[in-house]
Image (cartoon, rainbow, N blue to C red; front, side):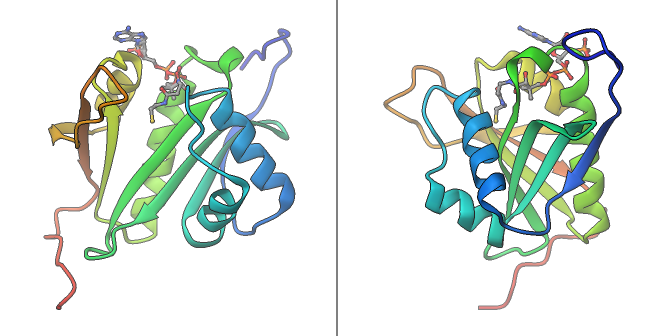
Length: 168
Ligand SMILES: CC(C)(COP(=O)(O)OP(=O)(O)OC[C@H]1O[C@@H](n2cnc3c(N)ncnc32)[C@H](O)[C@@H]1OP(=O)(O)O)[C@@H](O)C(=O)NCCC(=O)NCCS
């Protein structure tokens, strides 16, 4: 694929296995290029790197996107995508679909049976990407007085096995 300056790049998705100051910085930097409000502090970024699952979208060795996932406390085979962001110059080239599709495959291979996420109802590009990789709208998130749009809850089934909650 051509990069921002026209050179060819090899695009791949990597699952992070470790926490480093560089990964914390990358997570925060891409988040700040992506959302109006920051999702992470250095502390919470380190927690998600340590205890969640963070996937990187890379063009050669350059990190151009991040996806942060956590597991549901009551249904451990259910993952939630907390955030997906691609650096501005790399958007709109089909990479979002490739990235999220690859993350779903990796979650499936780790035994996850379903994935959910919340997305702004006005974020039509993101919703299109999620629908293209198998998410369906399944409800609405909690209303947020800071935002004008509603949050849409979307879910993707990764397996036909029923999702069994943990016993109390
Ligand atoms: C959302 C995001 C990850 C998508 O990645 P991307 O690489 O830009 O998306 P893609 O190029 O793979 O696909 C975009 C699709 O949306 C479509 N699209 C773009 N704008 C659209 C709009 N306003 N309405 C409907 N569809 C739209 C495109 O046509 C494309 O569909 P196609 O492949 O069928 O042509 C990326 O744009 C991003 O980081 N955005 C900012 C952060 C964000 O919104 N994250 C999601 C919320 S958690």
